[in-house]
Image (cartoon, rainbow, N blue to C red):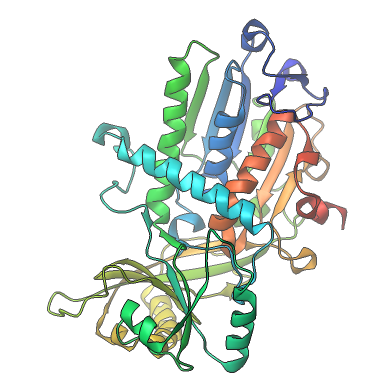
Length: 436
């Protein structure tokens, strides 16, 4: 029965090969497409999983009957995505434009707008199943400031900043200009590099709003008179891909570090795991010297993701080879985190000494291998999974600490590849890992 299901991509001139699914363009008759729904599973409800789900819904033909089941044992944004720093820009620490930086930057900004629109129009009854209500910003548009910390660092940043994107400028500031943005910031070389278009995303609110946007797309399709769309969240874990056998025509694995814990993939995908802890700091009520309302977040040996005049996140630690995916941080671990991060943060923002520790959360990153440019891992993994099945299994992983930056464009490409059953739609740099 699974072999008779359809692979359909919105009409945009993208090739749709026949087997293992019969390919139809969106000009096919609605009768042909509505006989039996296409059932897809997305494993993981973080940045990658929500981006794939959104694009599966938005990129598929309007007349296609489509059912998407989203699996995550914790819920929306319960893993590493939900505790990330949320500092979004298209550059490396040396201010070099990242791989396919323009495309990734543009598509992620589009998804942020989609999420903000969904949150703005939602009712309290629509978010009763969320842990976080939309009572604050999803995107804080105040820019990001990077102090120069050494002469070598200064020269590198200066050279690379000349090739910045027009949509995310890098400006060189002297000490006076930097002090206007963040009073009492400490610049050892009297120079900082400012990205006024960079943003600070609240990760938990963002992924929950993107989930809501997916639900809204389904509601719109139900009233459009075209094919029906379904979208369901299952708060349960998938321990074996074999458990899904016969249920779906395609399964997209967006589990981050937990992908390597599936028996079919364990030890067969080249990800490196790294536990990171982020500390939450607040300014006490009796301190009047707030962080400036329009002040940027700060990137240096430690980073400060500003959430408001009296509220910020500080990160992050890097515990390589950890397998601990628990978000909980013990008192001992929190003390070690503060001992490591606070001196680094005090070096550029001494006023942080007046702030209080308010808690910490941890996430287990899935870092890509160093052997192919530290790029994410995408592609069809049927050969690796080894199941003799008409179902196609896809991996979208290894996003590391740049999941927020990569997830928009790569989630779109992954959705297009799944819907058209065509791995060639994915840039070859991202499937190279399978051939090593």
